[in-house]
Image (cartoon, rainbow, N blue to C red; front, side, top):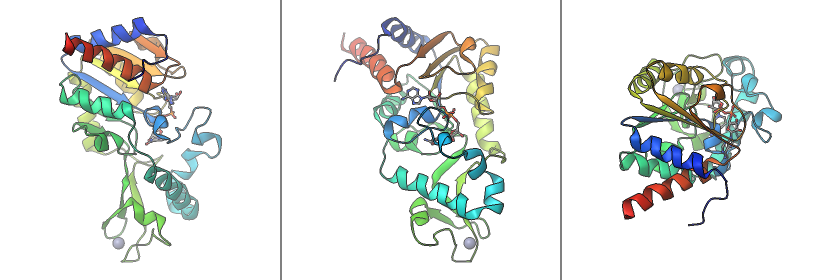
Length: 255
Ligand code: NAD
Ligand code: ZN
């Protein structure tokens, strides 16, 4: 395995130490976790937001008033998802869970990659685009249905939508409760690849800090909560950071 190219050795050492010292570590991921799998995020330079406004097309208004734009947006996202897979960062997090180094993942992503990579304790705050359901009869369908002609029409004639939380919709009470419980228990919260502009994920940092948890933010660009982190790792790819930390853990096991 190649040594990662980022020059953040001290921060990476500290990140490893904090994980080893923590009895309950929560990982919170955003779209930046999956850009290295080939899925664009929303807000960075190559993000989807530069070409269209997801707040308009992925919204409750679009679902009710602009169905063709809505289905085209999700059809294109599903098409992209079909040719992408979890990256080395996802796989490392799955291994860390198995090794008892991390306890749970709260994700804002809808790609399902943490579960696909093998993590068992995953809270999908915004749902999962791999699942579709009919708004009338509740019949469930796989995402591939959206790639067929008029795949959004159910056998019953109802409209089939992705099982994701749209802009303007409430998060499921179950996922909010589970995330809240994880945050209450957490001693260390590591945020990977989120601009931290979306609720409630961006509130979890303050909540964790209220009971003394430490916070680490790993992100390419500045985030709105950088001043609340004990450790910031900036301008470095998540896969490089996780690989570097994983090498430290592997060396510890080998000695
Ligand atoms: P965001 O687009 O607002 O921010 C992503 C952040 O990740 C950016 O600040 C960017 O600098 C950083 N980043 C990108 N690639 C990185 C990398 N390789 N290493 C380190 N940092 C990297 O994303 P967000 O905060 O998650 O926004 C929330 C919304 O985006 C959520 O509602 C989520 O559902 C949606 N979303 C999900 C997916 C997905 O499921 N993969 C993709 C796009 C958007
Ligand atoms: Zn139906």
